Image (cartoon, rainbow, N blue to C red; front, side, top):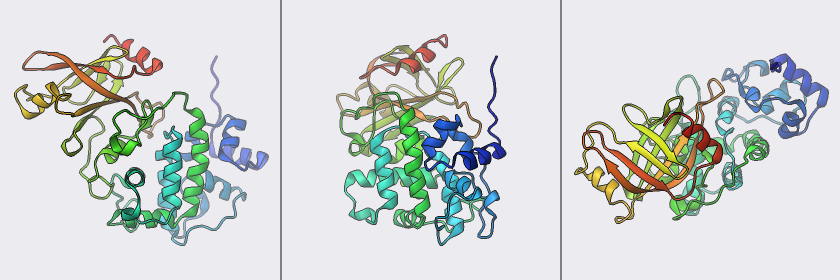
Length: 343
């Protein structure tokens, strides 16, 4: 028989008062509370909003129960906006990214004064927070540059402190070995088998996407970055296999072999077709990222970066199916689920 643990607001408040924990990690481990339950409600963004109606997060919960007496940001509305965005970081599972996000959030350097690696992490951090564009619902002054975004982030020390607390827990959940992706792409910041939001991956490989100057990427599909000589194929695991949106289909044939169907209208003699066929000769890399459906409503599942794949063969002309070999075998649990879908 299964039992559902009560994660109501009253229960959380009661547990906080009872245990008076100093760290988010200790509270979650001691009370068997799901981290997602600390970040459920969007709350209201307003200067005079009472704490009970502010966005759910660790800092807000401690303020509600009288455990936090830290000074809030000068701009309460911006602080509430950033607190609302904290749940977008529940997936971060590699130490380098966690440390770098915290360093960017607490640093003083302007974007142009950062080294290329720091700039990449800054783009990724800003993109996670500000994409899609904040609107009336968020009720903040929208920054027009990446330095403007960094200034807003740095104006709220409580946001950076909570990021560090959150990462202390999310890093503990990560059980996969994450090694750097071969080839030095994105200034070496990407990690094989780590979890990413699609916007993070795009911001990592495209200098034009900094969260504020961007088109609206779909969650799934094929993204070509010709300046970086890279193509990203993003797909979602479903009950029938892995689909990449529309009429595209991606399946696992073995732990290191995948097949995907090109979108309608694709031809082998097109520039993209030739790029796929001869990408190794032209030093163009194809990356694959896949995700499972989210078990938590409102919190999208992130993509597991499977790394570079190399063209092996293809078949068909009207609906071309490519077969490629991964450099590294996919994680065991993902492979088992993928291959068990009848594909």
